[in-house]
Amino acid sequence: MKSGHTINIVEARKNYGALAALNGLSLDIKAGQFTVLLGPSGSGKSTLIRSLAGIEKLDSGSIFFGDREVNRGPINLAPEKRDLAMVFQDYALWPHLTAYENVGYALKRRKLSPDRFKSSINDALARVGLESKGGNYPHQLSGGEQQRVALARAIVADPSLLLFDEPLSNLDADLRERLRIEISTLTREIGASALYITHDQSEAFALADQIGVINKGSIEQIGAPEEIYDRPTTRFVATFTGTAGIFRGTVKSLSKKGCTISLGKDLIKARHTVDLAIGETVDVLVRPAATSFSTQAANRIDSVITDIAYRGRGYEHAIQTKYGTLTGVFDTISHARGRKMEVSIDPEKCIAFPSEASQ
Ligand code: ADP
Image 1 (cartoon, rainbow, N blue to C red):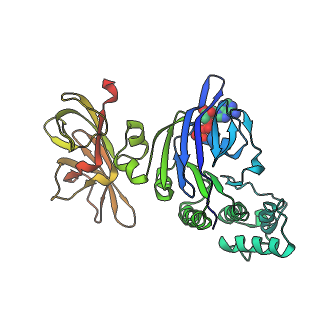
Image 2: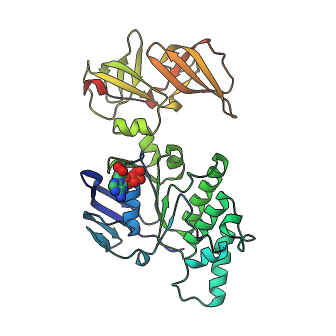
Image 3: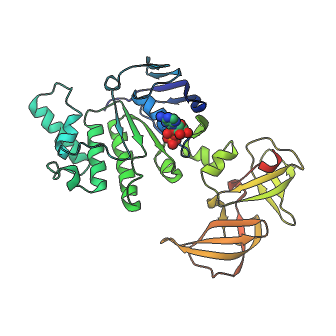
């Protein structure tokens, strides 16, 4: 197993007219680390991944692979000299080549013996479970199989960096989950560093060693998935990575451990990652995992069930409280619409930010 590139992106800038697609973005990826860049459409993800691939020029800033500066402003090392491979959303297979030939295409410039050439391709196809489909053309393969061929093509030359551009977006939910696991396993098996871009937070949390949350061309926060989920440092990061609902309230008291927020007649405890002042108006962002119908837990408020969705392992409820709605309140049994229930909100998974109205 080889070790992947160490990547350092330093103050990358790219403008399209007045629009800053990359706004002084810096990011480090350790050798062999799986990094996911998570952000909404238009936040600059594709521009960044294309710059890493060498198919987009920066206006200014640098990208280093190890000690080698591969982008210095608009000066680029050619894509084929970067020892990387990319997997695209639309598979990008040659339609007139078989699966075997598509994978072999990535080995063309390697001077391998015919035996080695053949065994490398067959090995890569076997690793993605397609050993029997090498003779099929892309139109004779399902979407999932085509993406597996693209994955085999990406790993066949044993690159030091794998780039993934929303590779699961065109697939059905069930297949997406299976292929996500294959991507995760294969990438780690070959020891490559990886950068994966997506707007899907569950995909990001499932795959990443580190997640960078990108907004308007720069990284808002970077860290382990648990750190991003438990300690979001900006409101944008907190909302983009998932909330069950938001309650507006006033800061009643503050301590090192957290804060108490007055929502009207109820007080709830929450945490904060930015400075707050007593009396300040705040928005309490409630994580879906914070809510339950447990009667043992603290932070309980009255609610009425407004909707129920069956999720296989149990039921997710939407509820109405005096202070707003919450969605995704989980229980293994279902509770009828209109039923009054107390909902508990885990203070560790509620994060208070200065309210947008007061900023
Ligand atoms: P994402 O991948 O996160 O959706 P992009 O990197 O594709 O974001 O785009 C970032 C911003 O740059 C968007 O506002 C997009 O409209 C703009 N943009 C991207 N490519 C071009 C281009 N070739 N010409 C003009 N604007 C572009």
